[in-house]
Image (tube, helix red, strand yellow):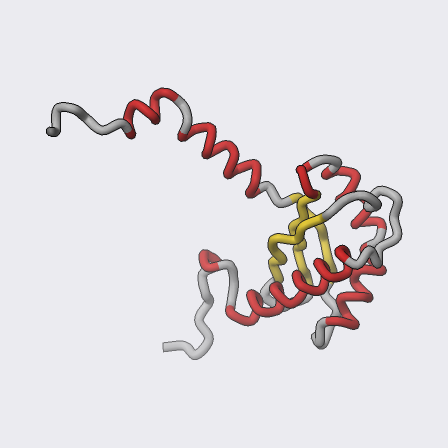
Length: 137
């Protein structure tokens, strides 16, 4: 059996990727919560960082963000992209890695997906299927 087997990406990556991603997430959340990024488009926005996914070589971090209330997502992503160099430098200072990872920002769409599923579960057809049958009693 080979020593290094290719792991499936179903679990979200290796233990190391998950650990480094969580460390980067904490660093980015701290930077954003302290208001260290001075950009007019970010002023007045509370931004959550629910997840950071690292590439297998830890050289690319995909940072998922969501402004509170889900408003102005395009403007927030654009502002974060404009300040990418500053954020990368701050991450490099706060996270002890051999290389500072390149970063890219994406909108976290899990909230939209959860809302879509919630609406589906409230449809009359699904409610009819979930209702207890009176014939079984």
